[in-house]
Image (cartoon, rainbow, N blue to C red; front, side, top):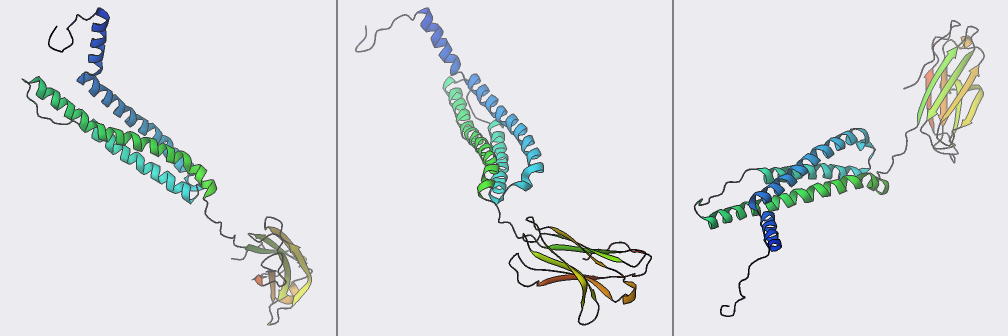
Length: 263
């Protein structure tokens, strides 16, 4: 027994094995190996996840909303930063130590491990955050989508003239508001642009689309002085057909023509 100190005793075999196991846990070589293995795991995971994200971005990035695109782009940025810090973790570090001094070598090992700790933790945090951001990108698009611009009304006109001189005008419309009124007729190319009966009327369907035809018995008597005219309103409540589009009916000879579309 010594002055106020715990008396020394012989360790049992079990305690000796436990002591050796604890020493192995805190062995510098084992610590370096754990750090390198974890850093390499992050590096390999980034390569796999990055490949999957590249494939996803090619097929689905354009379908993401504004918030989703920001989150996905941020996730890719975080992946790049994570790669940088993983590289910093794995890079060799030079330390000065006296190989003849155990304390000097232990201090050098401790300094090296501490220097690797911060970039390794940063890389792991950035990698995990990037996965969370990428996972939330499609979900955020449901709650933060760009306002859809109203579809622009598109009207295409064409006509066909048969051998007997009968002409059939054709209209194809899309991008209109549902149930918008539309009419199609042949008109003379005079200053008054008189409509020639009959005038065909129709309403766009619930998708804003419509097809319409109008006939005239004989175009030859107009000596090419003939247009095909389409008129439509702004919406189902339009009292006036404020928009119009026309094409000249050319080649009105009884040899027939190919349908034409307006620009």
